[in-house]
Image (cartoon, rainbow, N blue to C red):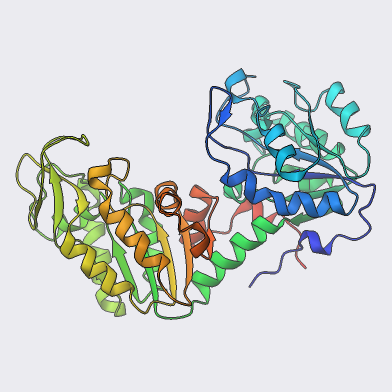
Length: 403
């Protein structure tokens, strides 16, 4: 299935300037990086190029500055984090124009085995306007011109977007390949969904059905069991006539929920929904709470209950492929995190299974419990992972050259 050129296909790169699109869109508070997952994920690709004597130019976006050089969205804190991990000083071009004369000079002066990090690509309004603004073509050309015609895309997190720095640049480079992180994401997500070792169980959570409409539809074509938890489960439960109190519900998706329930039956897929709940009076960690099988009026469901945890764990037993996207409850509140944490423990304990974790809260749960090294892949792409699970061809992947 995977047929894209990778950095292992690049030859004779010593002394060559190579533009690498990374995903350094990391949370930063008071100048301190809060989560290094995406930075750590980029290191193997960067190290491979530096060790081969390439002159590496790194670019990424951070947040949504929308063309404004906002100081709190500067990539400056990322350079020392990279330096520490790579064991070499990563230079930083603090240029609000991103590709201005100062940056061009720094890129041209790079020596073999040196690296330069560009400023936030979204400091330029053109970045997100590729194909919609004439000057975006110029920006893509400027980025590509910093290199010697070689581009590596290792930013799976933005692969679902066609921007100047991941798609536009490929028009102006001779070689466009994917890095190790992108390769790993595509391979494992692709294999998990298109060629799974069975039984194949998918777990979907989070707040809204509307966020995962096409994911549900696509996965029902592939899985043996589909587990639905989190806020989105209440739309399914209400559609089937259950009382859900004040729980999250998308009224305009009730018919869709019934369609998916029927589709699961028609295809012989087990579709599992919560059979009990931890309900709360208010949206607060300290609210009054209790375990019920039917949500009371004036209360809301904020986590799956113990019977549901047992049901979902039983469905996971023996699974050989698991894809998990989204929490089982209000994971950020410790009193409503048990469902998510228990599912996490079960997935981590599966012997010889391919386990793919995507979605911020799913990833947080895995890390919080210290099970990150027990999972096959912790995806760095939230939106990209979802669109991949929908079966959509991602622009950032498509733009890389085929083998």
